[in-house]
Image (cartoon, rainbow, N blue to C red; front, top):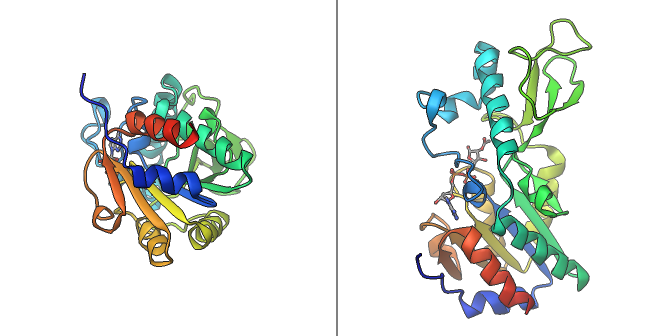
Length: 254
Ligand code: OAD
């Protein structure tokens, strides 16, 4: 067993007195649930693929069978795992903040739905979700059953040649307008910003911490390792979020 991470007092104090907290999460938050992060090498039958080359509209156009199989596989992986103590701690923190009439916004780049499963309410899914799909042709919406599709690519029930795609944002696609508006509102009004488990290399999320800090918000980070935001942050915890978040939230809400 390793030692427990130290939780900076400045972080606890800032959170205790925050009137509007904005949290940004990335794949690292789900890593302790057993889901691989985006930039980790894929394993098994997917080892030979670069995730960056599967998450594009061009890849879907070129090979809808392959791309829908990959996302179907990810839905299946999600079904085998559950939220971890980090997700639960964030839900607890939101409850504590809202009970005190304070603002709380959780911006996530994750598409796995684990924050909602853990009880988080104010979740902005910047990159969409793998749990709902739509026809790429007529946009009819579908909720994924959690079971693998019968055939690939999955077909639309309404339109004969329509192929279903996940409601995620691929490279080169626009973020959902409502999500980006809610994110900008949160960045513009938060007094504390925390970035958790994200490599901070994909725009626009990678600029959120900098923008909040430039407005005068306190900026914190929880990540296994330093990121481009570390130098800008008021304090950082370099530890697994599933370990650090429960400790932090226990102290804030004590
Ligand atoms: P990445 O895979 O780029 O980064 C994961 C980050 O989590 C890294 O900085 C790790 O150090 C950190 N990490 C891993 N395990 C952790 C743990 N247990 N506790 C804390 N931190 C941990 O994932 P994202 O930053 O989410 O976009 O990637 C952002 C976006 O890039 C994704 O949403 C995806 C990808 O391109 C799209 O698909 C549009």
